Image 1 (cartoon, rainbow, N blue to C red):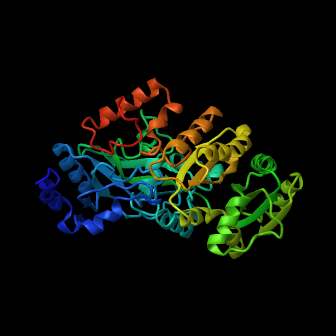
Image 2: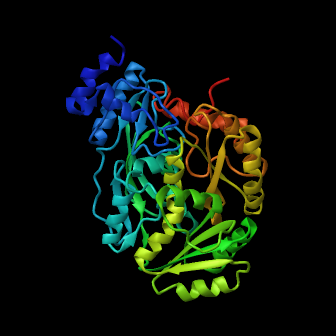
Image 3: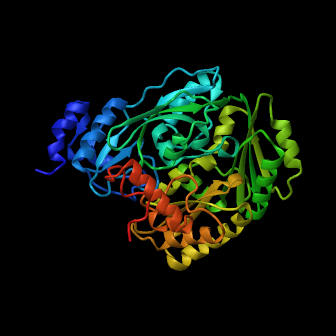
Amino acid sequence: MTVVDGLLGPLASAVGAAHVLTDADVVAGYAVDWTGRFRGSTSVVVRPGSTAEVAAVLRICDDAGVAVVPQGGNTGLVGGSVPLAGEVVLSLARLADLEDVDPAAAQVTAGAGVSIGRLQAAATEAGLAYGVDLASRDTATVGGTIATNAAGLRALRYGDTRSQLVGVEAVLADGRVVTHLGGLVRDNTGYHLPSLLCGSEGTLAVVTKARLRLVPRYSERVVALLAFDSVDAALVAAGSMRSRLSSVDAAELFLQTGLDLVAEVTGLPAPFPARHVAYLLVEAADRLDPTDALAEALADVGAVADVAVASAASARQRLWAYRERHTEAINAIGTPHKLDVALPASAIAAFVAEAPHRIAALAPQARTWIFGHAADGNLHVNVTGLAPDDDQVDETVLRLAASYGGSISAEHGIGTAKRAWLGLNRSDTEIAAFRAIKAALDPRGTLNPNVLLPPPA
């Protein structure tokens, strides 16, 4: 009998036998990430239904010296929620309580298992909106987005998840519970634990609830898809939109190669009669129709080769599909290496030009797809045609981004995919401080021990 087998009885007592999963076929789905690149194994998945049950599970595992991987919607892209070393999987899917929106505070308290799509729907019903939006909104969860400090499509206007987080309830590795959900905007009483836990990838505590700020809901929206014959021209336009138009929610960059793939895989028609090098999708939202303001801003943008504008919801969705369906199309042709990076505005065009050449020199069979959030410097570099465990291209792309003064992770986290290269962006002293915080909150290394921090020398 293994150590984990000896825990099945206590775990069943903690959460109910129906929520301790051991069937090999069932638990297999919890041991692979959304991309299919990162695969592990586990003998048990535990599905607690409350903070008290999470605390009981962690207490049992911590006492036994058994590592735990917290898992939300499992839409992560860097292997951060996969049991790569046989860890117990702690699924937070049942923590799905969503309280009524507090319209006076413009806040809501949500369980870690609430999907971003459901949270957005509740905010909309209350006449508000949630600032974080992702293509995976219907499966990505509040807990998962906090773990990775996800940003998504509207970070240009509203910031990342950390910017929305005003309080958390979380369980430490030994089962102690930290609760701070009052939602006070001005609360200057020491360390801000929500900010510390956000982006910690489940290594410091398991967030079970969050108090989130909501933002105004703008009913008037317009989307413009702009075509350019150079990446530089598209980036100049993105910068102009950002600085001239306060109503811009999103400014998304993609290339003709990606558009061709989306059309091939999904059957979407080409948006314009001619082909172009780069495309910029801009969405503006306001209380009054922002179409005229967008048109005025566009009038001062040179080098626009073609444009399509949509204000009706269905037409906007059709334009958005050219950008949002990139991930689906890429996954349809093979398991990708997904490398999200952040770059200074002045370096984006050079990086977009250089990265595919660097990749081709290492792996001539590989295909490179670049798209992302142009106005805040976040690019998604996807590479297909590589073996899942081939890290040469990953290292080349990450080192290239760092050489331009960029970050090796803009919003997906470090996970297991990038932990070896954390030193490209963080000094030895910073990493030592990270380890000290980890040791203070999780002295036995129970929580997600194989992500974020580089393996010990």
